[in-house]
Image (cartoon, rainbow, N blue to C red; front, side, top):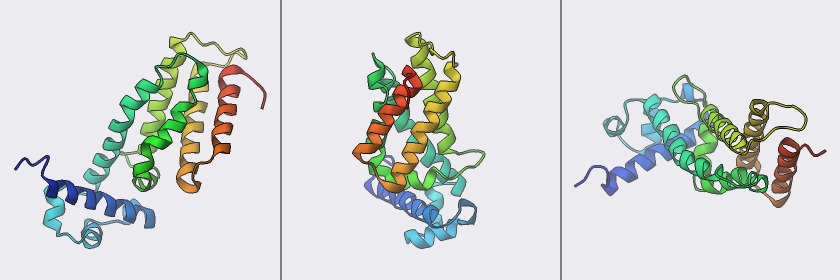
Length: 190
């Protein structure tokens, strides 16, 4: 059997990732042990080590998986023709990750030297925003640098994303996102 497509392997990895995510929602990363993961996932330590070197390897691979799903999506979303479509990045990002809501909710607050989902997403959003604004030759009418605008944009998207993870999304949230888009990119008043 092919190791990569073996259903047992996929189910075991999914079990380990879900278990790890649930533990992260209960306690800090530093307080989680491989034994905690194994006990909760109902697997032996050797099974865990067949798939991951340690809890850091598991964390790194989970963050990398989320980032790899996000990168192509972000590239396509920033390939827009007008500013009205720009807020769709945040809204569509929520839809893209809704299936992995608990995993992302668990990972977004873990910050290690080798894996930091929040920082990686922020970097990607800033890079995508900066690329987009340069592509359309955007200049703020208030003489605000694109770097500053992109930093605010990324922070706004990620804060909205975190609130969605905690509280859920509704129609008013999307209206606020559109209004903030107008403030940041068109210079309109709040």
